[in-house]
Image (cartoon, rainbow, N blue to C red; front, side, top):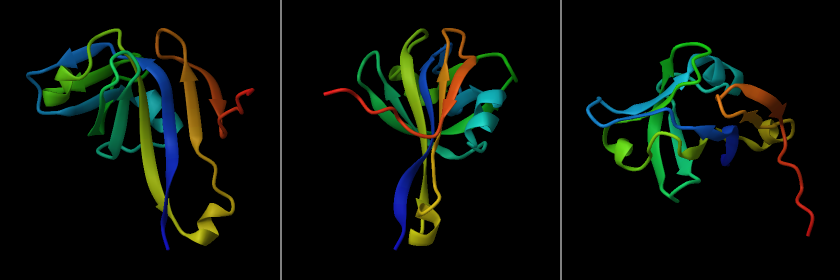
Length: 126
């Protein structure tokens, strides 16, 4: 049996561009992609914290250390510059692979530069 697990998360990155007249996808600073372990053309889910939209697209590389998060094509209707979004990638794992699996979680500042890395979401106080 394969279990679908969170592989990587870019938490509350800021959308820098929304380009309607573009072929599609989401351009992401290649430094963020590499740190998260997200491959170019990999399917991603985007959760817009600002407006509640949720959608699926794929990642493409933007200039390294540019901080670019560009939502392109039809998805540009679902995000605007300065929106905060969470970008997630998922993977399927076998029971054996699950034993030692931990996701990569990246947290950024207002310029989309990494300020913290983690492999677990902190527990919330009740």
